[in-house]
Length: 259
Image 1: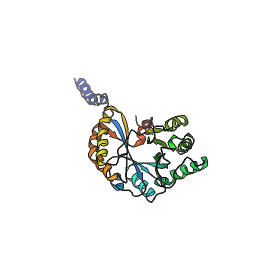
Image 2: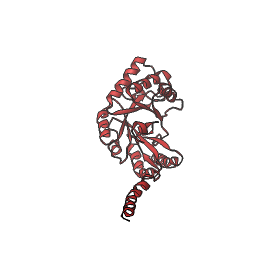
Image 3: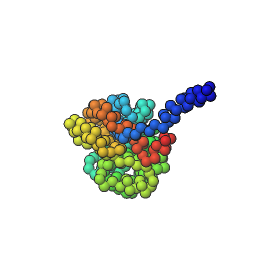
Image 4: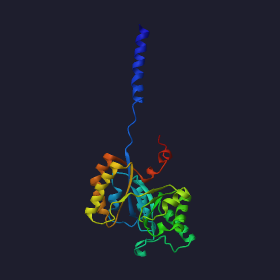
């Protein structure tokens, strides 16, 4: 009898653990990465963006007055840092680009040196995207050099999709450079109405997408974007996990040591 009682007690202590171990895993949420461009020049809403209660990816322009400070603050607050490399557009003034810009009239050596210097100027950078850049991202010679340097330095590349004729995906696949593509801008039109419309559209897009990338900016539209984000973040979090950009790279779960 004592033996039977002991067996019952032993089984009762094992069964809960066994049952718990066999429970189905929770279904993974969808993933959303929010990228904010144009840090590095003490632009409007810089502090508010860095204080958001979610991980954002902070795209910082090199060689500007607060480049290093913004990178350090972003890193300290748990945000991911990428280089926001100025690149020549098909329309617009070169003066809008800022220092260290890549243009299609530069030699191979000049492009290579400029990209290396930009990466070295932005502490904690793990990736890169472009500022403007519609002309350069259509130019195979120039973009090949940019991506070759990214590969050498271990950086991934985000194609901001400022041109529908971008050659980045083609070259990144050829060179085996990890890359991602932007899905939408919050503020390519500056009005508050449009920014809120885009923020709302993102909620709808999450219904049909497993992963999404959305880009906003500090500066002219910064205060409007950060206000819209504060209003919509709770809705985004109901549908998706808000993650650093690099989490969306293929194989990132393996790289991060996740099961």
